[in-house]
Image (cartoon, rainbow over all chains, first blue to last red; front, top):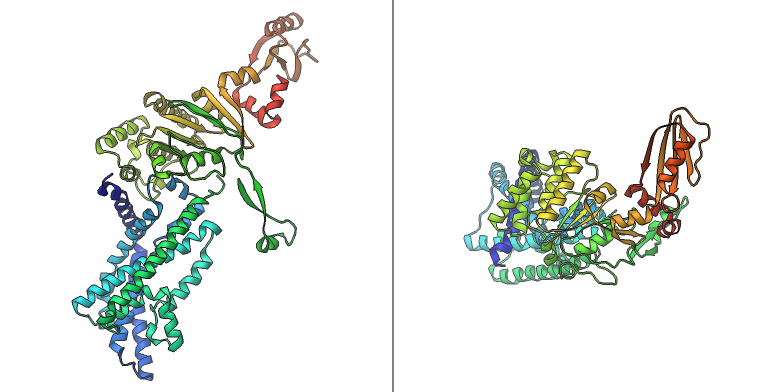
Length: 267
Length: 322
């Protein structure tokens, strides 16, 4: 079995997911509209907050607005729950038919999520153009952009595995919505997608940087806006990779355990 | 072995279930020992909850047995799930493996990639199945818009595209009309004869079994109670015959020696008798001597009524009666 043949099914899964997602046109358009509205809101919010308070030295208003806007654009990709499919498949039992195919189900889920994400990634372009009518975004030099891209890619994988683990809870409980909401809220607050983690006071600040959520939004964003100095890049990306590895191991173990306890409902 | 949560009853039962759990342990499949030769077409039947699906799940590798051995084409399914998957095809009557939102043909294309089927073989199989199952009209229709009959045909093709050596069919004709059922049966027979595919058919429709299978495996409460020819189970356990007699004029209380009256409806009376105790021709002679008769018919039990008796009275019940 050569590599391209082994890879072919997953490419096909991604393509099918992309095509499927593209059929929901209204959802895609409203997503762009909602994003532009949120860009306007964060601009107003941070402008007002900066008027009332002394700006932090390393994060002036224009950098803050860049941070918030880039975070929103990233959310177009990161808010796609690429593994929601697991929950649906457990509930309707079709996970069983997937397991009867000569494929790796986790890679299938990843490809499907990736295909769906790819479609949403395209909405970044119109969203960005529209957002530029409202805000000015700083553009860092190319090496920083490359580090940002690398860090974002790792963040995407960490986020994917986090979602995977949340959805995999459904293997044990059938329903996992509540667990998911809690993690989502925690993640929204502690990942740096809304408030830069550097704003958290001393002890809390150290705590949030020690949590895995920081690897999702905060690390790439701090690189992008220049709060992180180039000397720290390797260490920061290294921490992300460590989280990715840890989540990878946990996910693998979870999957193995889940695979062993599949009981199809009403079979 | 299954562990199920025991639900408490009573007004506070649901609450109690939420906080404390007691488990019931149940052996789903305990006494199933069987071997199937390549190219066989067997009917695997039993009442709901007998353990049929559990067996199929173990054979397809998605359920790990707590004890015992399973081997499919030389592969232990749960140890080497993906390798096993290449050897098998599965059709569930109640669950489609086609991609709901996509045109049928795209599901086939996806399966070509999944099983890495060489293009020429894929083309040849697809053409053959499109022809056999008359799928030309809806090949490009999204699966969600297909009728049940069309979807089932699609599912059959999907399960067979990679030339599996063994196919598991779980109630493949459920919900289909008579014509569609017959078409599917023809297809199953054809695949078994021409491609030599081993078929394990699980169904509640015993007409499927009667038409297709020479061997039947009957399972009840996780144990095999019969494994053998369809004709043998019929001759051995279907010894009761029904004699239908149509009289010229209504008869008040008809009686025949050696036969039991089941009931009278107008001019028609039904008797049943044990084939090995009373001879049918003797009964017929007796009837024609006693009464004026316009018509007489001998009915032998179909597989369904035999199996029904086994389900209701147990296997031994049938044996002792016979």
